[in-house]
Amino acid sequence: MLNQIVQGILLGGYYAILASGLSFLFGVMRIVNLAHGSLAVLAAYLILTLINHVTSSVVLALVLAMPVLAIGGWLLNRLLLQRSMRGGALVPILATFGLSIVIDNLLFERFGADTQSLASNIGALSYSSWNVGGNVYISQLDVLTFTTAIVVLGVLQGILSYTGLGRAIRATADDPATVDLIGIDSRAVYSAASAIAMVLIAFAGVFLAMRATFTPYAGSSQLLFAFETVVIGGVGSLWGTLLGGIVLGLAQSIGAQINPIGFQIAGHAVFLVILIARVYAGEFKSLGIRWSMPRSERPKGVSA
Amino acid sequence: MSLLCVESLDARYGLLRAVRDVSFSCDEGDILALVGANGAGKTTLLRSIAGVHAPHAGRIVFDGAEISTLRPAKRVRLGIAMVPEGRRLFGSMTVEDNLRVAAMRARPGPWNIDSVVDAFPQLKPKLKSPAGQLSGGQQQATAIARALMTNPRLLLLDEISLGLSPIAVDQVYGSLQSLVAMRTTIVLVEQDLSRALRFSNRVICMLEGGIPLRGKSHEISREAIMDAYFGLDRGEPSARH
Image 1: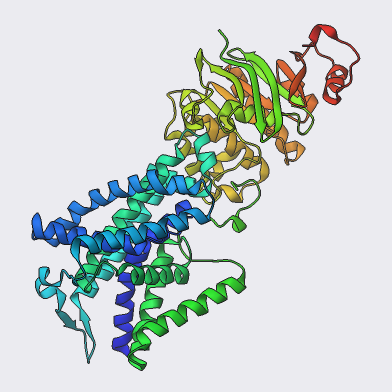
Image 2: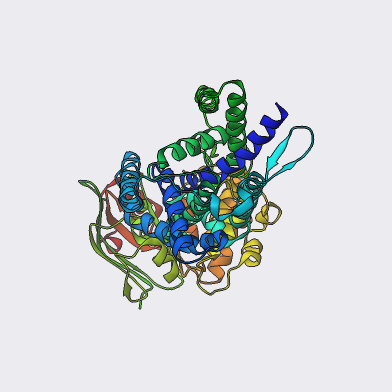
């Protein structure tokens, strides 16, 4: 059981990376990006393509993919998300759902149905592990994933807390109309937030590709895990995303120990229990820094 | 040349004309009070100048350039800052962060964190506190200080005394004296007529979107304003338009 707990915690690192972009974009723009999973798969294919044609280094491919995806995120925001937001809360959901279908089918058209993976490109990292006592083994890739999750979230917290861009993002998440009144174009901040979310998605894509196999239609399952992580950890919460990932990873890992199909069912069950508990508690609360304050928590005189 | 020139402005909410064919101008250093009953169109006029509400017709000229179609953020960079009704602070951020974020796209000018804290000393011990946890008066001071951080040439103040205790209102208006001394141009919407007349040098009374009365604050009688306020017609033709 100890082994399962350790594996579950480490698995949470991947879910935290996967969910951070979804949570971040929701926290800033109040958009549920249903294309999030497909975008992670798109990032995985982009990195795979770079490895096949430009460089054999996964790290370098990730570094090259990040600005490409960031620019894509900026354009996505300007051309689709901001326009769809003008139509009300439902339109962005429909728009991103449509986008996910387009991405999935374009990937299928370009790459076919073959499963892909970067495991062969990372050598022994894909299977090496450390024995930390007894029958507890920890995968080196899992440790790298978890460490990356902490570093990525830490850097994101640093950006949000100590940089001008971070302050602008937090202010825009609070009240975009008032941000315009102090000379900051909220549309530009939204686009920057979208670019950051895509950089986070680049990390999700590379770890998806290194840890497992993927196909053009793998996005929906990734979206589901990301969504469950965000809800468990608290909507729009930075470190809550890591906690949510760990809880989901633990549930899946322990569930798999009990029954082979328990991997999926236990995760969904924990998600449902927490979702229902939060709905009945009246609001979604979370821990740690957040990029926005729920309107119900805003005191009088504070932006609506 | 006037700093601000509003010409035949018409602003609507759907079919409702909130501001009707309003024209006025404002010189550098003016303190112009907009008074009138609820629904008279004061806030809509202020929001139109700030760019928050798109006018239906008319022109807004600032420092010789038409700004009618510019977004609010661009108007701020030209030197127009607004303190909105209800303060609308970024409540989860500290007071200092509220000020710093406003300085990001600021024009060059005299205002920085040190100088706004000098003008609003009640903020000094609260710089690290979340803005949402301040008292009403401190929040209003933060909202005005935040607007000043953009180094405006024209400051629009919308109902800054709303919801504050009389002591807090006195404190906020007391702090505004430093702006008067610096000859900052101010257009303010104020429900407290006596205070508006004391603080301003010009007054515009609005009624149902129009301007039935305007003039110098020390020349217009309180009775004339009250008549215009409620749409009564009892005289003072020299001040009427």
